[in-house]
Image (cartoon, rainbow, N blue to C red):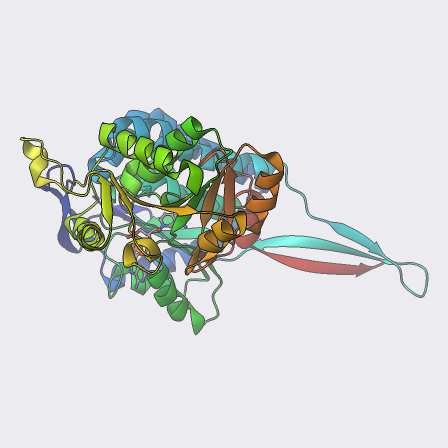
Length: 471
Ligand code: NAD
């Protein structure tokens, strides 16, 4: 595990342990960047803004992004193994989602950039000769990218790719729990023939450590962050003094709505996926499902049976995170009903030292219960009945978050009525987590600020400037 600063790999700093969530064993060490190293990384990234990178055309940057994508593909199995080792997620998930999506992140922004154009206007003037207005897009400068542990490479590259596409330089700080694929990415970028110092990588914790030192650094021009909402608040405060722009993808408490007219089998299958993918540790996962009363019992029975049958799921990321999830489950078991799971699975092997939680289905809790209101970020879903469409919408829209929601219905008019009325950034109808990387991605309320994806990211990572030429 090494930092990548000033064009060199560097293992300086006090090491902290890297723990395998599958077994709970310490499997390595990660060096925590000192404040001086963070300073050096930001300084090198600033210096690179004045180097040859500034003269690279969009076409050259687009080709560079494709070379990075090629580099990840060329070491695909290493990336998959590193992501699985850090997160404990099943290989199938890393090999079909995390790593291919990281490749797609670079390719999609490369392609978008190559085809992008800015607007121009011919403006009338009193002398009849007119003026030409056109827009020039400039990079923001040095961008800090701070990312979480749940989809480590996917979410890191979701920001690094568009930031580089628009000609910024980047200092990245991955989650301290999942640093491995970021190290591999630094190696790939080091070999992708970009100008020196365009990309820097530092490791370390968040508060009072590399994350905070980076985001409050006066040499950082913008911060792109994915993580918890309260971390977002801390970063916003750190960026406020210098009015640095922020792009935030934060927490969620996503609702599913199942109407009686839905294809129930499909709704159950979809909800199993939306609640339990990566053991619920995806920001888009559904944690509360409201089911129209006539089909509530049938849906609840089928979902609980499906949860009990789930195989091949992974552990929680850490002992601390599991303790938080189990704390919610203890209170929920006391105040409501557990239809499936609710505890810690027993394997009779080394996994018993890891951070596992059973896929869990709850019901019977009031709406103001912490397990129904707060983000759990584990394999836990709560079911409650509703009677009318209005009530369903009110339930889904309650609470502090507004990231994503899923509607299951066979009525096309209802689908188009309900989906846009949800207070979220992303609404799926009869599916979950179906993504087109050009679409706006992000949340409202405490779930985020701004949108990522396609032109939304390219716009965030650049400053439009107007030039007016009198003809
Ligand atoms: P986290 O906020 O604890 O950490 C995220 C990153 O921020 C880490 O790299 C961490 O070191 C750093 N950090 C922590 N404190 C910091 C500080 N004071 N200053 C600067 N950096 C700091 O989040 P996490 O536990 O890694 O990730 C899980 C959270 O991420 C959940 O809330 C989840 O909903 C959210 N998430 C959101 C999305 C989305 O797209 N909306 C996607 C994935 C995860």
